Image 1 (tube, helix red, strand yellow):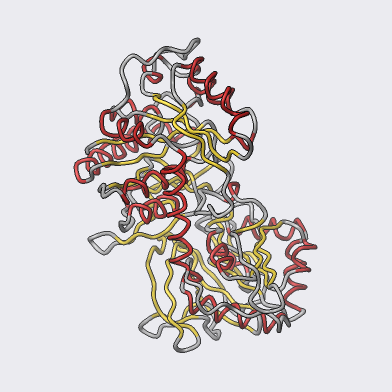
Image 2 (tube, rainbow, N blue to C red):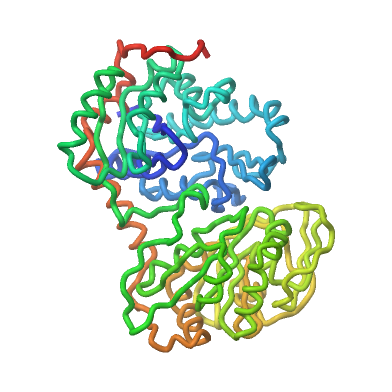
Length: 511
């Protein structure tokens, strides 16, 4: 086998990431050497990958998850271009793992040819090394205002000769109109690569859906390769927090007599919400994203997560009254955790001439440290211990660093260097992904429950994050095998788009 496939979608969050992961898992289980690829990702949910040269770089967490589905280590090349929004008008550009610029919609156009060239060359290299590369599109290929210069949707498919399938989320409603409209807005050259559809998140009677499947095939000349059912156990790293509902994860019932209630503040520029999602692998831990002060007051543990705009998000906390709720929570002696940008918000002061360029601003004053932003971003995989002997690992992505203060550390690096801070029931760390370390997560939650007065909460000693993640990936692989026409997918991956696919009017001008 030697080939590739583009998984496009009718909208953002239609199911491209999970379908790509499911196809990767299915192929991996069939013995295919497969890799994921997303030419350009816009997301603040990223992870640090260490290359063969020992240098750390960022890719989207969704691509790291897809790599796990393939049974391989994540590679910077799986997501060569990563855009990290810092505001509604600007994004940091990460190219092959390294931040190279901050752009607006206007000056992005000048940089786009370089990004496209890198993405095309990276995909070509991966296709020479792997039997199959499953590519994920971005947003919708029918965003006709963005088609000129596109190198992640049909522009990528055209350049690499990839067949494309389009996935639509039936849970949103209007899925047939979305599928038809997606094809009908593409140029004839792009339409020639769109080889079929997948419907996602179906629940109900397939007999009622069947006429619609037949009609969309008749209207477009393209088959529906399958219908994936809605499945509660499929919760995997999303590209951004908008893909999350209010509840993170699918926690099992408590092992003790009480639940532990965790409130995660949904910051406007939240990054790596997956840090808190890992807490929900523990039975009895209810994790919610919130912007409501009342839910902060009702929580046992409050988490201030990472942020791509620390100073601006801190100002938002104050404007919305959430800062007062967080301060009241801490004053009551209940546990409060800040992660990366959230940790920085808990400091006495933030000196930022880099990200927001607002100079010195007061923090929430709950931890005895000051934070200064440096021009160079820290990117690292880190290992160490907490409470003297509990092993913990994670990764770091931050411009800010502790510039003054000598607090009690939350963690220590393997060489003994202190990291983070603890003051009573308030703590913070720059490490993302720490709660994926099972013993550390259980110890942290046990301590948080004690501080919150939840004496009936008991952790489950056998919970392993890696097993929970692996089970979810296997579930995706099972869904692909059971509900999609895998013979048809195999033919597309191996042989490319079928000849003679009909044109669906009106189409877009030649692109």
